[in-house]
Image (cartoon, rainbow, N blue to C red):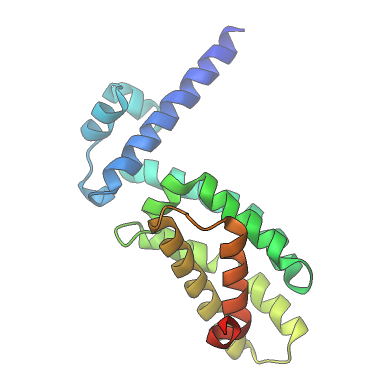
Length: 189
C-alpha cells in the first residue's frame, strides 16, 4: 500500500512541475526559464526537480515526447480511415487536443517549441503519403506538397481553435479540417 501512495505523490509532483513549466512558457521561451522559477511555482525544492529532470529543456522534451506518442497513437486510426470514417478518427484527435489543451496551446503557439511543431507535422507524413498515393495516381513529390498543405493548414486551424478557447465542438473542427483538406475554399461554399 505505501508504494501506491508514493506513486500518486510522484505523479502529482511531476504534474505540478510540468504545469509550472507550461505556465511559464506562456510568457517566455524555455531557454529563459530557470529551475528556481519552476520550483517556486510548483511548490517544490530543487532536489525534487532534479530527481526527475536535468533541466527545463529536459522537462520540455519529456512533455513533448509524451504528447507526440499520444498524438501518434491517435493519428494511426485516422490514417487508416482515409478511405473510411475519417471524421470519427479526426474528431478523436481533436478531442485529445482539447483534453490536453494547456500543453498543446503553449507548445503549438508562436512562442512554443518549433521542433515540437515540426514533429507533429511530420509524424505521420510517410503513412499519409503512402496511403494517399495508393488511392490517387499522383507523384511522390505532389503527394508531399499535398501533405504539407494539409498538415500545416490543420495545425493552423487547431492553433486558432485553441486560441479561441475551443468554443466550437471538436466534431465541427474535425469536419472543417476535412472539408478544407479535400476541397479547399470551394468546399466551404
